[in-house]
Length: 502
Image 1 (cartoon, rainbow, N blue to C red):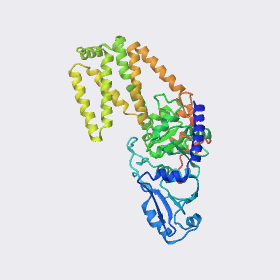
Image 2 (image 1 turned 60 degrees about the horizontal axis):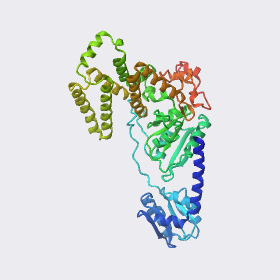
Image 3 (image 1 turned 60 degrees about the vertical axis):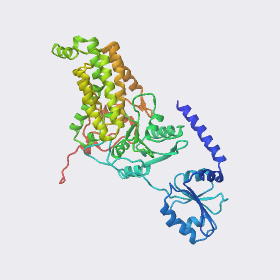
Image 4 (image 1 turned 90 degrees about the vertical axis):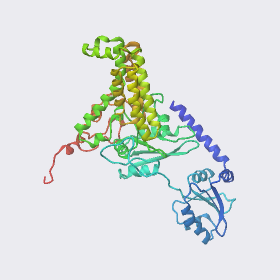
């Protein structure tokens, strides 16, 4: 698969070179003049040609720093103009493709004469965007309250102020035939495995698509198995969490225009760890993490076990409980599987309605709709009280996952378990479970095992998997990332209890 992508990448570069040779400054400016926000006029005593996109360039810089210099001085070369203008990072070029890319980013192009091939490019980019706010998806009670925004540069600043290291490295690439989206591949040189970095860069370079709007596009395009329901890259809106995994030797992918940063390689257990796990004492964090894992299994298996036991395995139900179930299902005209499907689809409809509506209306619809529909369904004899409680608890348990991506996966994989329970009972549930475990064992994240540290079994990495042990026991970085420097700190010194006067 990656050989085909590399071939497409070579063809893409050849097409870009062909387009580059066909394009001239004259054809570029003629195409831009069709847009009303493109400004091109003559300024200064020598009537220099100034061209830029008014919606992208900063008007104050043009009026206060550039036009006064052009009006007060006479320049015979662009080099003289470059030395006089009070602006940094000026560039002189005759490459039409470079001029096009810079103008589309907000640069100003100045020519001595309209027929000249040499162009002076002046950075005058208008910085627009929202301010840094609190996390909305990965909210934590304690800890930092900053979240990424839609600007790549601002997101890099949020990470750099936490990692003041010269080894903190960012490689920028441009992806998207039309959008030319800026993407930063971030890692710590000397810790991250170079093979992982090269793999990410190669896969980004092999992307052949016209538009990249969000980081979720990248997730689908560079994943090892794009048909798997399990996410193979973890996205986060918290700078502190991304910095934490960078120190472990992982790689971050920052997409300009997206408030979520991707990290890789990742494992299945990372999707059930929350930022709060590291801000609380380790016994509390371990208990809460185990509660989340139990909630996930309950959400996936509860309704399928209900169908399997009531359909095939009545003898497993205690006599005291059997009377309650029989009385609650006495007037139900449907078999257990149809009863479960009706309630599960109702829950999914309420979720979608609550997610798509405005916040206040969505909350009202979710609460009122759940109460009204649930009560009406029981009174109408469409479902039993017992199943209504089980489905409600399963829906509630699915919301305990701290990462939104894996929550969607849990919602989906419940239905194959229901089908297996209806067809073969507990044997069917076991078969579906074995299928998913086999799939997870084969799954990889950027070429690294996704099911680690369970397969391959790595006892060292279990210190921060299902439970979180104290910080002074985690002196080594996870083996899954293949870090160049596997040692985080001196474990012996960290375990010593020294007072100030010692």
